[in-house]
Every structure is written in C-alpha cells, then in structure tokens.
Image (cartoon, rainbow, N blue to C red):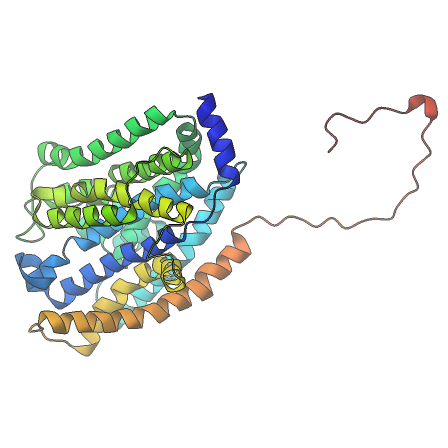
Length: 401
C-alpha cells in the first residue's frame, strides 16, 4: 500500500489532460446519434435484423456504455486532492442540469406544437432526473428520451466522493480483481434479469425479453454503476503505470469485433455485456497513447472540439431527429444510402445547436456558478501596532509558511 500511495503522489503531480478521451466522447455520442437516426429513418431494417438499420442497432446501447465507463475513468483521472464533496457535486450539477432543463423545455414546446400528449407522471420524474428508477417505458423515455441516462450519472456523481478514497487505497492486485468483478457483474445482469424478473410485453420482435427485464439491465441506475466503477478501476491502474500493453489500434479492432458480437448476441447480452471488455481496453489505450505521445486520430483540434460539444449533441439530437423527420414528412421507402445521407444532414443541423447550447448555457453556467464565490476582504483603517516588549517576544509559530 505504501508503494501505491507513493506512486499516486508522484503521478498526480504530472497528470496531464487526455485529449483522446475528449475525442472519444464524440465517438460515443455519434454512435447514439446514428443508432437513433437509422431507427427513425429505416425502422423496418432496424427491427428486422437485416440491412443498414440493423448494423447500427447496437450502437446506441454501446455508446451509452462507452459514456458510463469513460465517465468513471475521466472523473478519477482528473480528481484533485482536497476537493470537497460539496464542491464536486456543485460542479457536476452545473455541468449537466442546465442543459437538461433547456432541452426538456424544448421537448415540451415541440410536443405541444406537434400535438403529442404527455403527463405530469412523465414530466415531473424527468425534471427531477429520477425517471430511470421507475420501470415503465413511457416514463423512462418520456419528454426528452435520452435524458434517462442522466439519472444514472446523478447516482454516479452522488457516490463518487465516497468511492474515490476507497478506490485510491486499493492495491494494484485489488484494482485488477475489482475490474474483473465489475465485468463479471455486467455479464451476470442479463441472467439475473431472465431468472428473477417476470415476463411481459415486448417492445419489438427482436427483443425476446420484457420491458421490466430491459429496465433492469439497461435503465436501472444501480445496474449501470458497475460500468462507472470499472472506469474508476481502469483509471487508477493507468495512474499507477500498471496497465496492459495494448495499443490503441489493437484495442479499436477488438472493440469492432465486440460490437459485431453485440449485433448477434442472444437476449440482453448484446446490450452491454458483449462490448464491456473491449471498452475496458479501448479507453485506457487512448489515455496511454496520449501519455506516451503515440498517434491518435482523436487528438486533433476538430475531434477535441466535437468532444467538448458532445454532451449538448447527445441531449439535443433526439429532438432534432424525431421532430425534424416529422416536419419534412419523409416516407418509409428510403434506401440505405438515402438514410445515410439524410442522417448526415441531420447531424449537420445538430452540431450548430449543440455548439449554441454548449456556448450559451453549459459554459456560462459553469463559469458563473460551478465554484463558490470567495468573498473579497475590504481593508479597513490601519491601526498602528504597539511596539513589542523585548522580554515578551514569542518565537514564530511552527505552522508559519
């Protein structure tokens, strides 16, 4: 433990930014974007299991898992000694909630404009970010559908100040066992869901599991916490210089192979389990590539900028896709190439909106309220100090800098 502690002290003083991981945020949000785009534009292909819609059908769940593991990694990597829990929570709340509130209000306006009904039972849990605790699909995906994932992030943020000191005290051996345990837990969740939870209505012919079973594996915040904690373990291993020698290129190939497996995995194993190990290799590989100065296609200025606006893109894209497609009145006879071209046009429309949301909401709120104001002392009138008595002069205190 002394070795781990000393390595941590040395590593933290030289812990740099990791631009590749910022670029990875856009890769994750892009997967979610194109999965939703092809679901809206090619629903028959997405559901039937053939064609270009099917090829993107696992991208949404994989992208969300990417976000969760990446969140645990980045927060652990960037944690500053001495930061209080209250300061951490304040910063994270300023980061996510204003954007969530603006997009929720935009969703309400669009729903009213297009004549879509919604209830207080959908709106209130959404605004409070507790909808993922309720195993009802209309509540889970009500208002701005993608905001369900923020419920899990809120749980992660609430626990992080308590988890971090525990993870920091673990030995390298314990960190490896923790990472393995988190992966095994992710793999066990579909089995637990199938055995313990009842059946019921299915969302589509491709889903041979009930809405309740889907909720437990995919939406339930405590089930998704294993991915976040896995990211914390991985970050600590990189901090301590004890990560595997897996390069970014081989890790990316393994990730693509895992994604292909997710498309054909039975039951809910394609939701998270099939790609969790490739993600656990890919994210640290990107971090190590930055640390070692090796080539990374996600380190450039454009990739980093896209990563910076990725949260706003994630929050706004479903509204643009869903209501944009309805506004232009597209037909159902699109070809794969037509759907791809239209998806890129929608992405081009989403990016300026994401930049505006990032620039006019997220960043101003972060600058204004993410840190507590330090009161400025106003000097008062100076009083002359009495001359010290020689026989009463005290020695300087031991804590004087």
